[in-house]
Amino acid sequence: MPASPVIVSLPIADRPTSYRFYSEALGLAALGEPAADGVPEPLQFVVNDGLRLMLVPSGGFGWVIGDHEVADRGHTECVLGLTAESPAEVQRIVDQAQSAGARVVTPPTDQPWGYVATFADPDGHLWMVTAA
Image 1 (cartoon, rainbow, N blue to C red):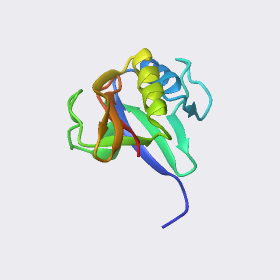
Image 2 (image 1 turned 90 degrees about the vertical axis):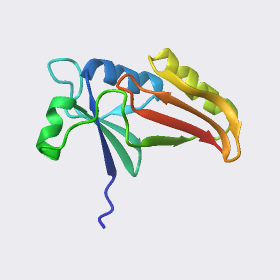
Image 3 (image 1 turned 135 degrees about the vertical axis):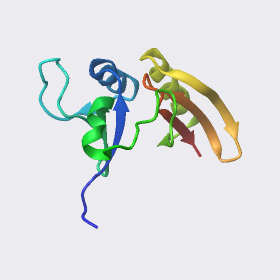
Image 4 (image 1 turned 180 degrees about the vertical axis):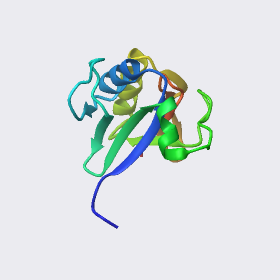
């Protein structure tokens, strides 16, 4: 397998809203030059050296998935995970995400596998933040 980053693509409803959310909530840096709407095209963020997040307007998913239907907003088939260094960092990430428009799904709490919280982005995609 080539040593290139994995790219996770998520359908979105509104480019400026999603751009603002991921820039503010998670502090991610977008790649590329701004398009006419002021948002980089394609809308792709660097999560780390091995992972990028691409946000595609739901109507544009057809070029990849053909006739397969995009899940309705708020329905998700995966949970994206972030690892935090401490419970305080979990709380900081969740607070920052909520300030940027996230809905907290499960507030930060101790679980058998660590200190964990889950939030939904403006399009309903779930993110779990865990400190082991």
